[in-house]
Amino acid sequence: MTLLILVGLLLLIGLTSSLWWRRTSRRRSMPCPAWMSGLVKGPVMDWILGTRITLDRIGLKPGQRVLEIGPGPGRLLIPAAQRVLPGGEVVGLDIQPRMVEQLKARAAKVGVSNLTAILGDAAKPPVPRGSFDAVYLCTVLGEIPDREAALRQCYATLKPGGVLSITEIFPDPHYQSRNTVRRLGEGAGFRFGYYYGNWFSYSMSFAKPTL
Image 1 (cartoon, helix red, strand yellow):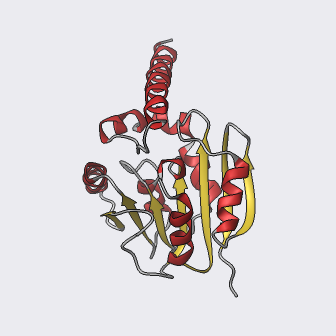
Image 2: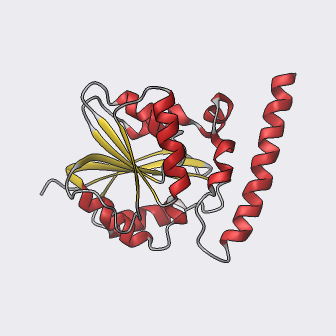
Image 3: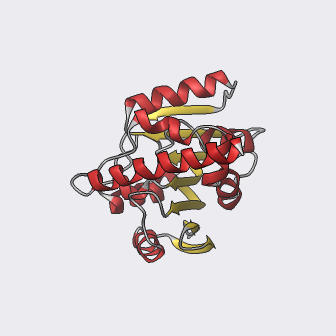
C-alpha cells in the first residue's frame, strides 16, 4: 500500500509539473529545467518512463560510440554507457550547464568512466562529423526551437549506416506525433526503419543510408 501511495504521489507531482511546463512552453521554447531533474530519478521513475524498454528499442551494442541529445541527469545515458561496454563510449550533449554538471556528478558517483558530458546546442553540436554509430533523443525533440536543423546535424554526426532513435511519451509537454517525427526524420535525409510502441509511448528508428 505504501508503494502504491508513493507511486500515486509521484504521478500527481509529475502531472502537475507537466501541466505547468506545457502551459509555459506554449509561450516560449523551454527545455526541462534543471531543478525538475529529480522527478525522473530513481527506480520507480525508471519503471514509469520505461528506461529499460527505451534502451532495448534503441538497440545499443558493445563497442559503439553513442550520442544522446538532451540527456538531462543521465536517466538513459548512464545505463547506456554500461550497455556499450566493452570498448564503447557515450556522449551527452545538453544546452543547460546545470544539467551537464549533474550528469558528470552522477556518472562519477556510480563509477561510469566511458561517459562524456558536454555543453552545446543540438542545432550546432560541438562534435566531429561522421563519428557516432547511434544518436538518440528521448522526449527532447519538441524542446528544440529548430528541429529540422537539429536532425540534419544528427545526420551529419552519424557514420554511414548509423541509427537515429527518437522516443516520445505523451505526458511530455513537447510531445511530437508519429507523423511529425517521421516527416522530420525523412526530411533530414534519414531512411525510416522501425516503429515500436503505441501513440502514448513510442520509439521510432531511422538509418543514415550507406550510399
